[in-house]
Amino acid sequence: MDDAELRSFLDRTLTATIATVGRNATPHSVPVWYRFDGRIFTVWTDPSRRWVKNVERNPLVSVVVAEHAPPFAAVVARGTAEVAVDAPGTDEEIRRIAERYLAADEVPAYVAQWRGLRTIVRIMPRQIRSWARGF
Image 1 (cartoon, rainbow, N blue to C red):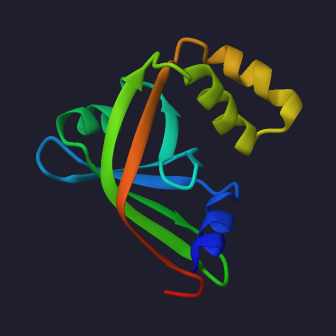
Image 2: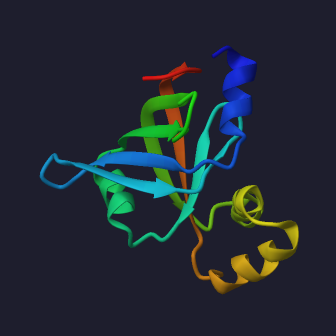
């Protein structure tokens, strides 16, 4: 994929799978909602999740966004992640992530029910690979 195709693909409402390095050096993968701004992936999450604890110990991660039907396009990013709680811009980022996956009228109530979750994980890719067709 070229840059425009990559951005268009990542702007779709697919979920991402984040893989982290577990306590015993085992991989740990989880599906997440995300937003990609052209440089960085952001994820709104619960700080008690195992994958977040893994990032705090070892920031190396991979992110996979893939179609599950033909033509099976996919993006694989590898890089580092950082965890931020109540950082400037958290409310705006939470809203932007929720807006990607929910109807506009559902966003306020959804965000309100999780108002105690103030953690954003930022993933800075060092490498991005993509393909538009097949495995």
